[in-house]
Length: 270
Image (cartoon, rainbow, N blue to C red; front, top):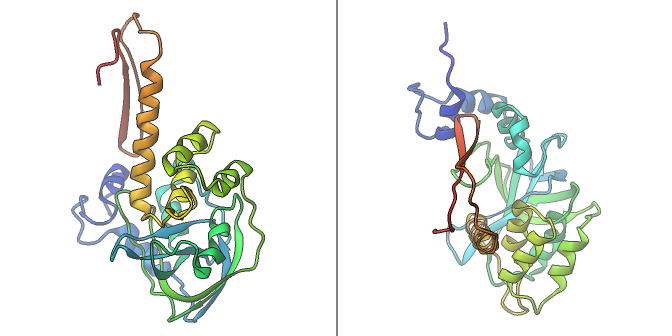
């Protein structure tokens, strides 16, 4: 009888370390067996909207949209994924084709980028068409920081056929070319935009002073936004009244990840 694998191992392993002791990742093998990637140089579908800016070869990086081959029923906001089983999330990403161009990060206003940039900043899925240099390569890859990446294919041309809907809060910051990127990040956060969306705006070179904007690899953008928002929050907390009550402990867990928050009396020391 097959041994049930602890889901917490899957979260830590992401199919790369084989912490379960099996010779192959059963989830990945099941997913690969179900991958149905069309053997064609043309794709039609909607972007979640989701994008990836790579870091390999920097400053000449791969950038482009994810185009889904199936109905989009997975929220773009990763904080919502906790409501879904791990295999469900993997299967959805395995049906999104990463269509990409290679471009210098400074050429953020190139027509190839402008064509899909607004669609990727949309609040709703946007229909797209892509002409590929070759058919998509079936695969699913995991990373400790980025979302799973499904089949990939270099794009010759991408055309937006749907109508993007951009948040007015984000749109205002995009058009403000006198605002530094770091200031834009904090102002978006203060206006209630989540860090995942802010990272995408920064990654696509849509923030910053005119003439200094550039594409930012997705993993770098995530780290930068976390750092900027974290520093800002620490500054806000340092202005609060000093807590003088009992030591309080809060905690939670999900798929083997455990979280604890300790509130102790005294001034903030970190």
